[in-house]
Amino acid sequence: MVKFERSARLRALPWYLFAELERKRSEAEAAGREVLDLSIGDPDLPTPPAILDRLAEAARDPRNHQYPTSAGMPAARAAIAAWFETRFGVALDPSREIAILIGSKEGIGHFPLSALDPGDEALVPDPGYPVYAAGTVFAGATPVRYPLREANGFVPDKADLERLATPRTRVVFVNYPNNPTGATAPASFYRELAAWAAGRDLLIASDAAYSEMYYDEPPASALAAPGARERTVEFHSFSKTFNMTGWRIGFAAGAAPLIEALVALKANLDSGAPQAIQLAAVSGLATLAVHGPALRGVYRERRDLALDALRRMGCPIRSPGGAFYLWGRVPTGLSSMQFVTQVFAKTGVLLTPGNGFGEQGEGYFRIALTCPVERLGKALGKLETLAPWKPTHVPSGSR
Ligand SMILES: Cc1ncc(COP(=O)(O)O)c(C=O)c1O
Image (spheres, rainbow, N blue to C red):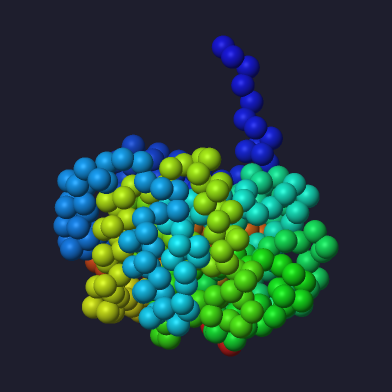
């Protein structure tokens, strides 16, 4: 047997809580128990038929059977640029300021390898999507976590960023609409962030994977803020907007040197996204005026159902402005993991413990609304039988 140890970089990653949840789920299913899984943010709805028709057509075209380019097809990038200008009011040069990704996660994970050196630091949100820190660690750089506090609407406090930034800081990651908190950020947030980043000569990496998943105002792009354009890369995804998580397709938009560096890295590691998938995904953009409101309507119904039920139970929880998550406080006296474990053992409902997204997530749990309304209702009904929040009184004003 060969002596094998995983690389130090892989070993340096924090414990991956989602593997633990997967284990719990498999064990329960093997024992024949019904699992009501509200832990995974993966849309249950199918990809729209028009996108699948375009995919089938493009798949039959032999021109799409060969290696794609690392940056993506000019036609796909042009379609994205046209949509981006209409949606965000930002005109991008499709040949230099847009690159197609194999899902936004691929770009987020690879970006630090193209922009950071060992010794550099990246400011990453806590709680936050784990890939910002993982990509930074793989690049030999150091993630420095900044808190997203409920009292501040889960938007970074400039005083925290200022306190945590050092001369080695190169980039600040931000993510709105936010996973896991469901928070959105106003355009003024990006203006202030751009001004602060300019003062310290930092790059901004904005994860806008949920830009089309909102309940009120359409979220702004970080690229629209004055002065942001030259120092920002923004990551977008077709995954959530078009129920395409399995097709793996997204894009990066922003400052040409950053996009070109990412493309240079990708040229050495992957060979771009399959062309038929690129063409199918961008064909969806033309349908967004109809598809977007319908999709948001589905999640609004689920959100309202879950919020009402949780509030009836006495759970302190904010109404999310975007993404498809609810982020609530666990009952007093329990850790996130204790709460999730107890709920699962007693009801078969699987929630995500907040500490899986960072230390600041301790004391919270996340519900993903990617589950049909009947099933969601069933899961909430089971939770209600436990009445987990009843014995403790929620301080007024904490909602
Ligand atoms: C905040 C955030 N960014 C990016 C992604 C990655 O999405 P994809 O790689 O499917 O585009 C996810 C997926 O869950 C996410 O939650």
